[in-house]
View: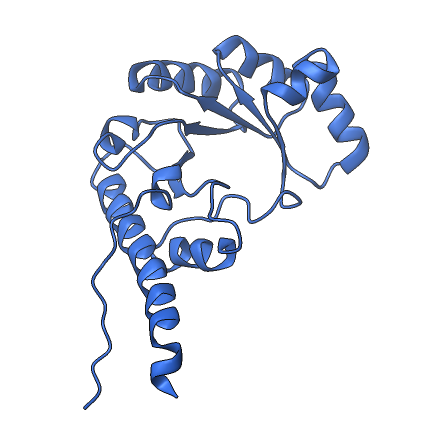
Amino acid sequence: MILLGERTALNAITRVSSIATRTRKAIEISRSVEDFRGTIAATRKTTPGFRLMEKYGVLVGGGDMHRFCLSSMVMLKDNHCKSTGSITKAVETARSVCGMYQKIEVECSTVEEAEEALNVGADVVMLDNFTPEQLAADAAYLKMRFPNCLIEGSGGITIDSLRSFCVPGVDVLSMGSLIQGVPYVDISLKLQ
């Protein structure tokens, strides 16, 4: 009976273990940066049908799931903001629907977009595809203007580039690379 499920079980264990291993490495890198106090999180970029296992791997590795599903937090991306006409209108509409207890995050490609989002009541701004230098400067500026806001850095952050993104003022670094393209650890089953 064990042999009937061997490959499926090994594939699942290998996938989760690989993600946990990659996440642990990211956590260790981030903790080695003296002035960085932020969290390492996954993104929603998961394999269809495997979200629960893959997000579990991130948790086991010490990372944060970010959002488990679409209902975990409102995230307004560029298309949402364009479809309503502005960041301001998108945040106001989301707040009127979800109320004051649901967090709203806005994906921003400039510091001006982040300011607009925070001015209208967004809880989190995601500074997307910023260089490490831009992220450091803009996070410092936004924290000075909006001390209670949460700032997330995202977009193309890999294990190799992670250290340069670990800058003061950033509360969360989200990495699709915690789950996507992770090298597999070697796990096997040997009967005695």
